Image (cartoon, rainbow, N blue to C red):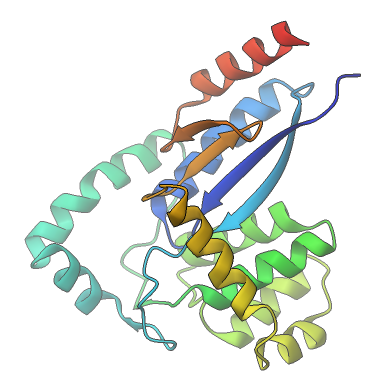
Length: 213
């Protein structure tokens, strides 16, 4: 039995490339059940200046990309890659772009209970498949309940400022390291793998790591 190798993942639960990247990684890990990775998810807000209550999604996209047509063009590759990965994204159903600070807090608390990847998966599903507002405390409490966390405790924590400073500091640390986009995967604390890489790349990484042990 080889020692686990840390795989740190900088991600945001409203990032479609993070959703696609996780699906690719999941497929590679399923194909290589003896993989060495110990995975930890880290906060990186795509929109750190987003109002606490989020904003209308259409307004957000048209402001970010300079109009409806430009937004459609920008998202065309996302749709193509999501379909190729067998993923559903309900863009039509999404009405708001949330602030993800509280979602990142939930991922952090889930990690304490050994449910971090379950939380990430549930947040991606809630946002991209069910088009739910994952900036809403009730939605987050419901997600917590679905992954066997105590929803009442999560509700109380969300109503406080618990771990807000910690999440912000970890996000800032990633940016100070030079990370400007997500997903970014860091293998063994030193090798950065940016972007939604295909399962074949992860298979090669796993094979290379196996040779080194």
